[in-house]
Image 1 (cartoon, rainbow over the protein chains, first blue to last red):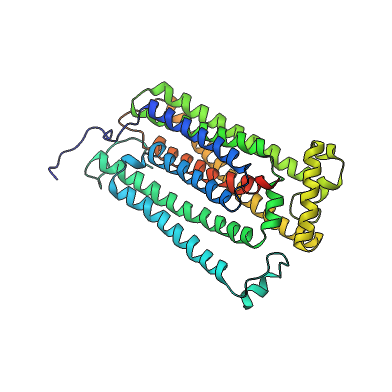
Image 2: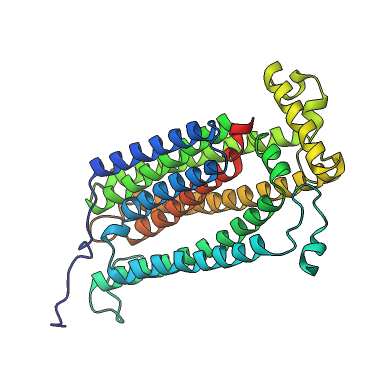
Length: 118
Length: 249
């Protein structure tokens, strides 16, 4: 609040190309791993592992490519709030859909209207 | 968007001005996260409801093309990040170079997508009147460019699916749900890429005039944020659409 005027806007953290290259390598490795993991039969854990790898890849992109790690706290709060709302939307809706009774048969596949009548 | 890098009256410092632009971009991206989130939710609910039809449909996508496109898009995110770095360090001629590379990689992605869409058209996998999930398994293997082994696998999967779903009509109905979501999700993603390509063109023209350096690079950074976001959407689309049921194939 000293009334100081900066002559440059370049006060942001500059991420080095070396770190960008490391992140690129990690993302490519993750892509390779997720394809290999998908070919192994892990039962219901296939989807969990796939989403885990995707989430790690996303975190790397946000933290480094998008400078999330070096952003002001206010911006970081906005990012976290976004995912919090997303979690509410996905979590509560799926909690509803997966616990409705009577559970509609997965194999017979009754028309959708039957599900909502329950 | 202000285009000169001068300090506008409502801000105290250039840093504050830049942070405001960045915050605004993030608020927009959060809205985009929720926009795509709703579609991912629709996909999850339907996948949960019709796992058989969705599994069979997902295995009909071309894994090699999907994998190649993921690599291309990640590489384009890297070149975009390098464009931002070039601007931040005032390497003016590199800014345009990295932006052009990003645009080219984005073009490759969209080109591969066109090839994939065409394949789905040939295989009767466009939802609508001529949709037929059994098409490739009924025709000789060469019709859909499958090897004999893959053709047999697909035939077994489809036969199993008809049994589990309780008839070919039901399987086709639910497989169309999958492909509607597939085209909806990848189509919206591709639309974002096309918009991104337009933004890149604008940045390239400006960068070639030497507009962006360490003192002013907000447009490069914010378009970069957008481009990375589109990459993140694909990072989730790829496993969800292509991979989930591969272990059963």
